[in-house]
Amino acid sequence: MKNFFVILGGMGSLATESFVRLINKRTPTNADQDYLDYLVVNHATIPDRSAYILDHSQPNPGPKLVEDVKQFSTLNPNFFVLTCNSAHYFYDDMINATTVPILHMPKLAVAEIKTINPKAKRVGILGTPGTVKTGIYDQFIKDAGYELVKPTQDILDETEALIFEDIKQKGQVNAERYHEVLRRMQEDMHCDTTILGCTELSLAEEQAPDHNYSISDAQSILADQAIALALNQRAEQAD
Image 1: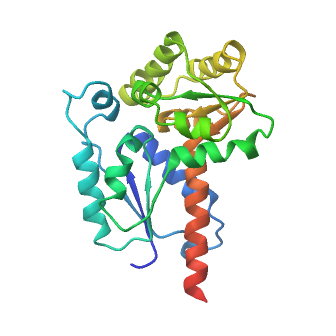
Image 2 (image 1 turned 180 degrees about the vertical axis):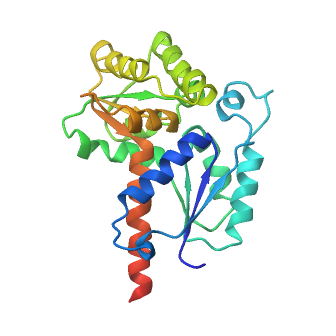
């Protein structure tokens, strides 16, 4: 197979399924052959990213991520997508291990805010404690000219429960909890737009989109960018 991309997933598996659904649903098709060519790497046994980021005595997922990049680079994909926000903590190590481009989900999510909400000034971030506390998104938000808004510990705790207890452990989305953390970011923290900086939150958005809060859904944006890039590369090869 030529002219394909690789989805580095399994972090977690339900969120990876959500990403693949978006790719297939949003690709313009009239026949089987119109869908995109891609490989899904569901490396579910990679150690928890957030746990290591917060406590380096925990198992380090970085070498496994680098190993995956090296392994699948030998297949000559056109590009990689990394469907885990926290894993972008290791992005520099991963990109240095390959000549294949790796789309950068946090950069894309921040860049899209100007389209989602052109009047946005205060931008909030929701995600795992590892993503929020180590600032994976922070500099991109500031460099774009926005005021960065972090969740309070209470909001972070509720978000963590949604991600780890409801989705990762129970395999279900608690829509009420999801909507509540969005409400608190907008109404209590006065965010103009809130970034969904965890793919489990993107899964929650897929299953519980019935709200009016302004969000930048990182996984959804990554899916759109991957589709656009893949279709453009297909068209170039057809010329």
